[in-house]
Amino acid sequence: MSVRIVDSGTFYIGKRQILTLEAILGTCVGLALIDRKNDIAGLYHILLPEPPDPGTDFQREAYASTGLPVFLSEMVRRGADPARLEAHIAGGALVGPVSEEDFIMNIGGETFDVVESFLRENNIPIVYLETGGFFACRIQLDMRNFSVRVDPFESPEGFNIERFPRPTREDLIGTVSQLKPIPQVALKILDMVKRGDYSFAEISEEVRKDQVIAAKILAFCQSPMFRLPHGIQSIDRALVVLGERRLLQAVLMAYCEDVFRCATGGYSMCRGGLFNHAVTTAHIAQALARSFNLPEDQAYTAGLLHDIGKIVLDHYIHPVAPYFYRKVLNEGRSLVEIEKSVFGVTHIDTGEILCREWELPDAVYRAVRGHELSEFDEAGNMLIRIIKMANFLSGTFLPGQSLSAVGAADAAGIVRGVPLGKGQLLEVLGAASEVSRAVKS
Image 1 (cartoon, rainbow, N blue to C red):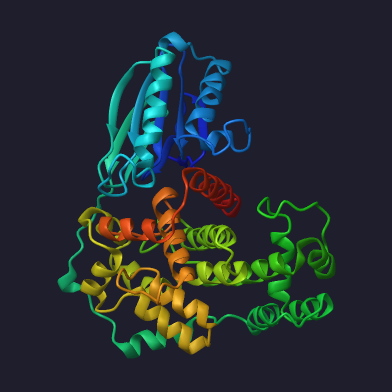
Image 2 (tube, helix red, strand yellow):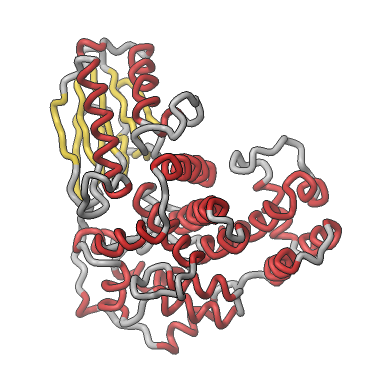
């Protein structure tokens, strides 16, 4: 039977059919509304409680307060009777132990409160409820019979560490040598933009030297992520419309789409999950850097490549345990702890090898080294804090992409390191959700 993934900030409504709707929930809340009499049901994957600007119509479905009326209205338009609806709710997990003032740590609880209040106001009974806790779950709505199932992440097959052959350093270096390095055109453009001594003509000339990169940039120009007019058919035109900063992003994305293309399983929770997480983290990092008056280009590049070490380890974990990420989520330990126990090394270690072999910029090396380590303190380096925060927000509030587990104590430290107001957080996550959907499309 086919499965349709309902992404965060979206919903699906339909009649009885051979289809299963599925949403992977962390702090997000999943709401299934069912009218059995009129044979119609829907699943809504709610990202956040309310928009930063209550008067805006931007991305209404991402927020419970603005999206729930849309969801209910569409259910009714499609034939549902409000008096016959029943609700099933799951998700809303805690990031870690919270106090009343820790909004960011209990954003799932805030979202659930909005959902519960809306259902009560509309006299829709809740027949099943499984929210809170500290672990991710999955809600499934079987559209054949409208049955709802909520499961924690559990591996369907055993994972025997004793049988796992640990890669040696020589094995890792050999794997690195087989990976396609960042093309010189990307590194050269990165260096040109950093120095500031370039012209549009020079950047355009460099891009045209790599036909694969050039073709992908033109394809990205048609993506809703960049919101560009149609009909861009030349690199010169793309450069003028994009501008040098977004062109740099497109060049790096074109590279990363290839290098992060790992099979489902291991670190990716879906096809293209590592790439999706990388791009989403990059955009969050860029937005945070803008808020704190830090170099946006450095933040974007570091955010895009922070998890590059996972590419190496995924080659080893995928054949042995396609659901390795579930092991991490179930055991409640940090990702690097389990990596160390299984591989003898972590994706931070393999990321360092890649940085040295490919001679990546220092800002990328620091992001690779510091984004997962609670004890890593670059003398208060704010860029490192931003990358850690972006990785944390992307992995926690936009689940279903790539494995990224942070312990509760580490999460509290990350939040303290980058002080964000409630409005700032909602705005950043709302924009990141849009980017994530655009990448998938």
